[in-house]
Image (cartoon, rainbow, N blue to C red; front, side, top):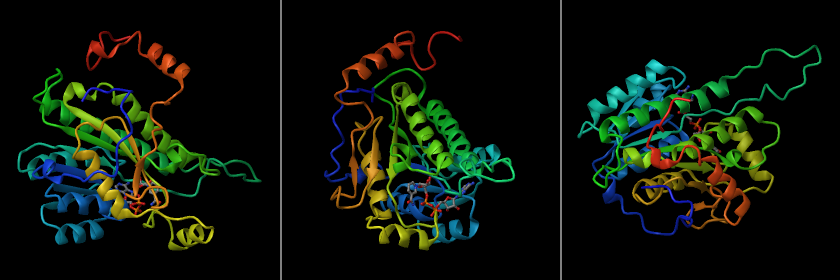
Length: 309
Ligand SMILES: NC(=O)c1ccc[n+]([C@@H]2O[C@H](COP(=O)([O-])OP(=O)(O)OC[C@H]3O[C@@H](n4cnc5c(N)ncnc54)[C@H](O)[C@@H]3O)[C@@H](O)[C@H]2O)c1
């Protein structure tokens, strides 16, 4: 679907027609736990074949043994070769030999070593968060778009089979989250990937969207951390709503270039909502600047543009 910045926010109250996704094949990175597990469960229930790509074989194999049409493939998303292997396995596992959906979900939240004062002088920071959340997501993006292009070609046509990349943001992809610049940088970065791809993905019959979860109790933080959040008077969102949010995106080919917020029920009865933050609605100056941004390389020039400079 061609990107249109005039698109109105996604109606998250609609019934989800999962017959659209049945029989398709998906990859979920970090699919063995937490939100990734919820995406895997929702996809499997909708009769999608799912590759669970995760660094944790114990959880990955356990989940796959419980759910039909799923397969665990060990993968550290920081390793290019591991991710290549995941996509090769997905093609073999797919009933159609095609990969339709990729969820770049694997992520960690570690103590931030960029914003930390060390009285004896600064030491080299550990950037594992960048390696997993950002480098891993870029590898996943490269492979997903490669397979989508290989399957569908690069010219526009209405006959192409719908494919979709879903990137995972966070409240930290658009809110101020003090004291965690590394994590926040990776989540804004995922948003950047979505914004870079969304206007041209239709050339290869694809869509790119984002799910940005609010706090959800998973293994990303210790349970004490989530207790503390609750005690502060903050409601949490629910992992199962993440699964439904994913199906809402995948089952509706009109959704492209949107980020849906996985929300506590107090802000969204469905458990997810389109906050309409992707197009600076109502800000005519920014809309005009955006048009100038792509004036010298218009979308009509095709997937890779016209020149190498
Ligand atoms: N839970 C939240 O409150 C919350 C909020 C906003 C965003 N998110 C995002 O949701 C995503 C999933 O997080 P979660 O909360 O489900 O956490 P989780 O810890 O429960 O699950 C993360 C999964 O990723 C896997 N993983 C970690 N490093 C990996 C690597 N190098 N290669 C492959 N797999 C790896 C883990 O084994 C685990 O199965 C992350 O991108 C996270 O940033 C979570």
